[in-house]
Amino acid sequence: MSRRRKAKAPARKAPARLPGDPADAAAIARMIRVDHAGEYGAARIYDGQLAVLKGKAAVVAVRRMAAQEKRHLEKFDALVADRRVRPTALSPLWHAAGYALGAATALLGERAAMACTVAVEETIDDHYRHQLEALGDREPDLAATIADFRADEIEHRDIALEHGAREAPGYPLLAAAIKAGSRLAIWLSTRV
View 1 (spheres, helix red, strand yellow):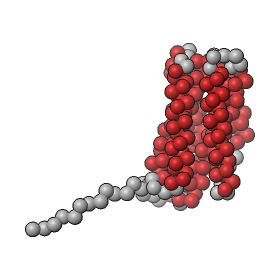
View 2 (view 1 turned 45 degrees about the horizontal axis):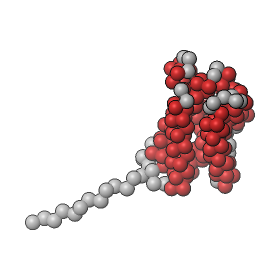
View 3 (view 1 turned 120 degrees about the vertical axis):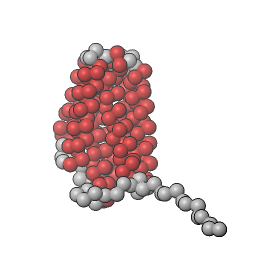
View 4 (view 1 turned 90 degrees about the vertical axis):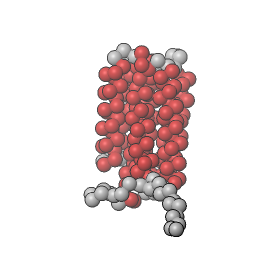
């Protein structure tokens, strides 16, 4: 009678590296760089929205989301400094583009500003999910930070939906354009 050993569940780990993939340290630096850039861009989007939405019903919600994004940015500022990660060279572009996107969508109305939030936060949710999968069991502190911030981004999306984002004029087109721009910004900030 043979005795079978009970197999242990495999530990969750990052997917195997492929030829040409960056080394772990470089991959982590890229994650921090792009997340720092993304949180900076998000803070600038909310700055632009708040400059235009004065006195509107959504201002309280936007202020709350902006405060959370500033907390995220402060954490990534610290990670960039502590780990000596080179920030993206595109920060001046994200400074202007983020503010312009926030102000422009707010000029289209509260619902358009909320549509912008939904599009950006859905893109960031997907981005953070991929990062968590790539990290696996490595870097538990960084993974916990990303998971915490991802929960905030999902909450922001939900708040924006409650404020009528889908009723914005041209919502499908507006959301698709903002998502495409956000994905491009992620791709560029990871590399530049």
